[in-house]
Amino acid sequence: MYNNLEFKAWLCIASDGSTVRVGDNFDEIIGETYIWPKSIPQAKEMAVGDAIVLWDKSRLLGFSWIEQIEEKVETIERYRCPNPNCRRLDIRERETKSPRFKCGKCTLETDDPDIETLEEEFFKAYYGAGWVSVETFIDAETCRLITVNPNTQHSIRAIDRSMFVQTIGALSELSLRPFTRRTHGHVLATVRVRIGQGEFRRKLREEFGDVCAFTGPNHPAALEAAHLYSYAEYGIHHDDGGLLLRRDIHRLFDKGLIAVNPNDWTMDVHADLQMFGDYANLHGKKLAIDLRKRVEGWLEKHWDEFRNKDNSA
Image (cartoon, rainbow, N blue to C red; front, side, top):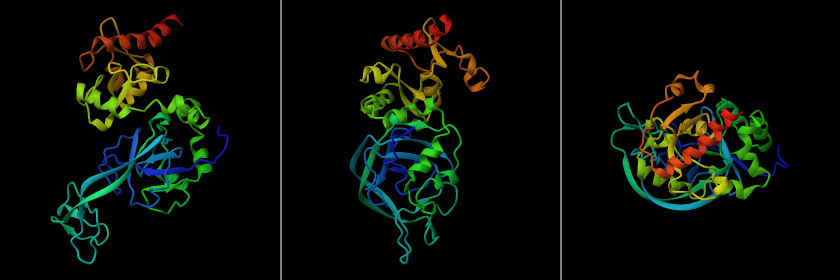
């Protein structure tokens, strides 16, 4: 599958609100961007062209290639342990227990931690073009075993490349396609897919709010900016050529398993999904947003590609 194993690869803890790592609550999007402080171990070793592998401490989430890295400086507030013999920075707030804060180093519990305002330097990586979301369960133990040092607790861990290739080798060729295209040198076809993606998504959120066009309101972390056309073919972000879709709906739309009938603008769910109630219930329903004429045009093209092709087969 690969010509060589000379690339570097990193296992990184994703910040999705459910995990704990230095720098939680970053404005990052799983499948598109990763942000980390310059102060953590190995922070400066990650580079453009490296493989990035994300996990949430319980399972593998996906992997890609780093296309671009930006350096950022932000003013942030951090909690410091008030114990004079500890003074650990970045102690955590607990959602349900009291006292609200507990220091992970000295175990002090308090409702009144010291607050410091700091300027912190970060790196922000963009990796969306080659992103492969891992739907097959690959557990935490396997994630640790593919690292050079399985016992480390660092947020960023160097990966044994041969072990990584062996682990993902069980995935289908179709699911690996975004990643392997980049491996074999088709850089322009993949890297350009997500350039400007952040701005594209921001405009869609401003227009529609945090609403999946097919299923309704949702948390922004669950919503992706979906192109209604092949970006790799057109190479630009058409302002009227996208909708916000829930991550699973986005993938099903891209594969044509969910489409929009241009006769009445209702959702058409493919027979292969009818056994799954959450998707079957969408069949025949109106979209959760009002469509613009230009969007209708792209949805018609999508319908022609997938449904008319099915009817003519």
